[in-house]
Image (tube, rainbow, N blue to C red; front, top):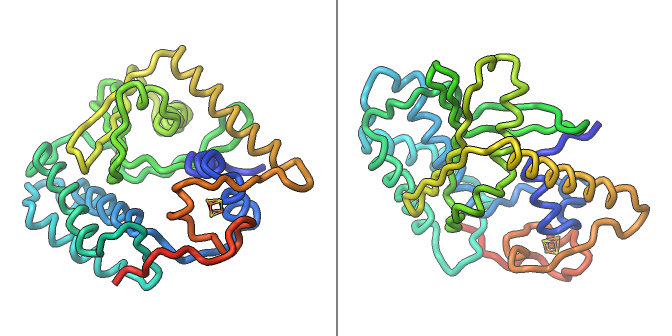
Length: 264
Ligand code: SF4
């Protein structure tokens, strides 16, 4: 049986052909957009902030900068690309800006009740298998849980938009099935929009969670329907997002390679 992730569902929604190239044909591609690269460095840094190394001490912003710098350098590779008319320095500084906004709110103690960071989850929903990674899960010891998600992109979702968001709702369904988690009185979903220094938070009712569940089920059915057609199930969808797609060589409607510039 296939295993789905939320990012797979989103890829299908944004372009079914890209989904086919990536997840059906499993074409390997080492190219990476610099926005994704920067996002990973910020996630790594925040994972480190809440790691055992820092449990009993305050973390200064200088410590954070040092970790981020080192992580950026160690992970840098030759297949990072920039679409916009901006340079590497801009994205490097933007990552620091995201961390600065987070530090301003939570540093230097970072005293939240962290249960897990970068937590891998595998679970079933309506007969489908899903996997995902929760950025951070907090637990107050009294049945109250918070699922955190760090966003480094420039899109700031509105309150109505986060209420409809499937990703963290999916993770809420997942922790309810997790063997190690027995005591759930409440679950809050919290998004950290780090560029803007703004947080959004949602507590779902059973009804709102069921609506999202139906929507997710529909998204998987759409993929399985496309997969069941011999030819033409996965149509290309040309949008602005093509600029960030590194599969132009495999795409049926592109006749060149992605023109974005290699980051230096
Ligand atoms: S280039 Fe655009 S249309 Fe082609 S696969 Fe990528 S996202 Fe889809």
